[in-house]
Image (tube, rainbow over all chains, first blue to last red; front, side, top):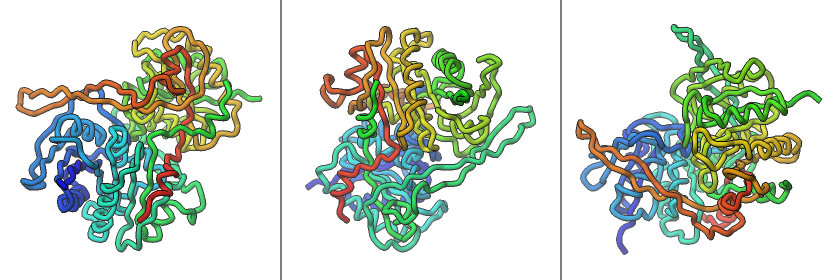
Length: 250
Length: 250
């Protein structure tokens, strides 16, 4: 069997440690192409660039065996451009990350790391996003590496999943196991910091804290991650609420 | 009963015709505050600004009875800043639009118009996004107006919906009725236009066409919209795929 073609992106930018680690792991499994933002696009969700062209620069940092591109756009832009132009054939899987910082709970909606693999699923390609529960630029990925490899191998073999993508969160330090589970309900309570600029303009800097909206011992990503487990959450493309749909009457 | 407090935003920007129309409709129903991007933020999905402050300028275009703010940020930024700082009390409902252009099918994932009301739902506030199937800057909203008013009144009275937000698409021209339905499965096939800049840099401009991934006569938004019906699609915050979750074994 020929080696799988693995496309890799992230939202922290091509210079981040997390994408280097993910690329090294993926190289042991398949042929790798990297198409990642040329700078940080954190919090960009499923945003795409509609009003300007994307600068696209070949990048040699991963060595001769990995074709790589630094792109002036969002993670979703990178996936679109890569799949439709940069890769030699259709990828067998699209990986995103490893993000510096977890993407549990409502982060599925804000995360550019996860946006990239939602786009994979829209294109009918399996997609898995990886996030480490450590924001440090020089985070230690050594405990995460075998988990990431195991999850990639698992989803490369899985044949029966359609219209779904996967978000994997990995604890800092030792990993006690892998738990498939849902994302907990939660939201960000903002406390914007306002100030007046020298020219009199008013500014506000969003600054918030995360609020868990359900008991913290539920069978959810936040609970398991806090107990040292990696979590795997399957996410739907079809977000219709069918229960509510049946109740609507116009 | 006191009048409801209605917060309005959009992604086309505060200068667009669609938000003026929506504001005028909402003023007949409640007290209105507008907090909208100061320019176009189309395709920004659920993106939020994490690395810079947001310029926030009072805006008088809607007259003395509407407090309004033009904000240098995404629709989600506008909702966060408004709810946590700009409005006098918690809004009873958050409305977004009226977007110039429909947001059917996978647009739920790309649309900034819809991102704004997803954020509403995360904050426990009802949210309804409106999109007209006409990209023209000077689109005719006259047929849409009674539908928008009816839908706002409906969701202001609805008490039993939690963790859900609503995307409403309205046809161009006469409206034959309102159909609650799911979004069709579909994706964008990109055909990037590449060019070399004078300095030798390579650029690509994303340019695509929409592909419907299921029969066009299904009971979905695309099918009903094409037949002249407005559609109302309830969307979940919890995007976990529970069927797939049960199949995962690690």
